[in-house]
Amino acid sequence: MQEAIFSREEMHELPIDLHTQYFKASDVKASVTVITHVDLRHLRLRKVEGRNHNSLTIVSALFDRNGNYVIGNQKLVELRLRDDTLEKRVDSGFSVRSSFDVKPGTYLIRLVVRDAEGQMMSAANGAVEIP
Image 1: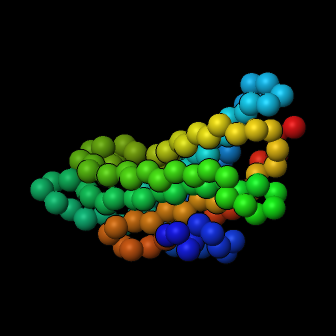
Image 2: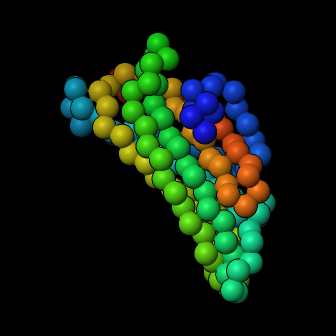
Image 3: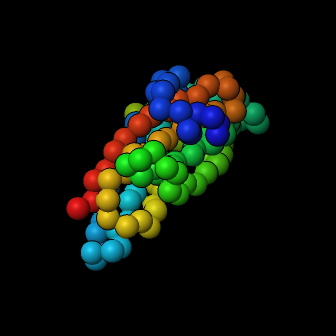
């Protein structure tokens, strides 16, 4: 996964979307939120004791305009969905947010998601400019 974070190549094995938001608190403080949306319709799930299982590792990283790593984080999402919950959520999917405190500027966002069941990975690039 570390290699994928520092690559610029996009991969689309898993059904994800990358969205960003920012809030500028002052001339020297800002916050960037990376929103990872996962589509459940095409995600592999394993049935265990009546629940639909998978684990997703979601890594978000910000790089400055020169390609230098600034900040990042990793989240583990454990899916253990009952059939009725999966049925209700299948059309809307789910989102995971990661927020970063940064200085105003231009940032490249790198998002990598890997699942445990299918051993598939997706990687997406985004950008945000905070004036």
